[in-house]
Image 1: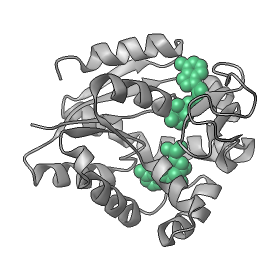
Image 2: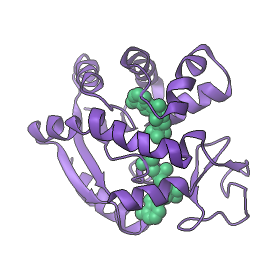
Image 3: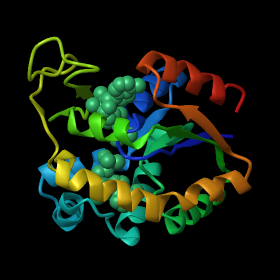
Image 4: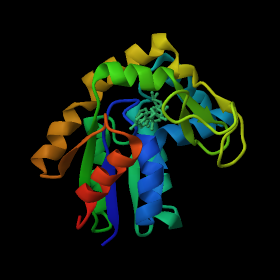
Length: 217
Ligand code: ADP
Ligand code: AMP
C-alpha cells in the first residue's frame, strides 16, 4: 500500500520547512498546494489567474479548483508510492474528496501530524518569512537566515517576502484557518489518525518528533 500523510497546522507553523526535510528522509513526494498555486501564479496560467485574488486576500481558493488541482498532481508518477501533503486538505469538503480519491486505488491517509504553535509565534514566523522564487525553499530573517542575504542557499534564486505574509493579510489567514480548517482536527481525530507535534521547538527538534510520530505508520 502507498503511504499518504497529511500535515496539518496553522499558516506559519513550519509545515513547509518540515515537509521538505521529512520527505527527503522518507523518500516521499512533497505536495504543497500553496507552492503549486504560487508556481501557477508566477507563470500566469489560467489556474494562477483564478487563484491570485483569493491568495492575496488571505482567503482559500474555492474547493472545486483546489481539489481538481490536487487530483491531477496525485496522478503523477512520482506519487505512485504515496505523498506527503502540506496545505491540503484545508476544508472538510477537501478532506472528504481526498479520502474518496485515495480509496479509489485502495489507499488511505495513514497519519495526520498536527503542528501546534501559539499565535504570537505564528505572527513572528510569518512576518519574518523569506521565500525563494524558484524552488519554494523557506527561510526566516531571524530563525533560519540564508548564508547570503537575499539569496537561496539551495538554488541561488532570489528571496522575497510573500504578498500574503504582510501583516494585514496574516491576521486574516489565521482567522480563515480557525474557521475553515480547524474542523479537520476532529475529522482526523475521529479516524484515529491525528498526532500532535509541538511546533514551538527548534526546527531539528520538530523534525525528530515528526519522524517519531510517523514511524511504523
Ligand atoms: P508553513 O508552511 O506552515 O506556513 P513555514 O515552514 O513556511 O510554515 O515556516 C514559517 C516561517 O517560520 C519560515 O520563515 C520558517 O523559516 C520559520 N520556521 C519554521 N519552523 C521553525 C521553527 N521550528 N523555529 C523557528 N522558525 C521556524
Ligand atoms: P500556503 O502556502 O499553504 O500558506 O498557502 C497560500 C495560499 O494558497 C492560501 O492562503 C490560499 O489562498 C491558497 N491555498 C493553498 N492551499 C489551499 C487549499 N488547500 N485550499 C484552498 N486554498 C489554498
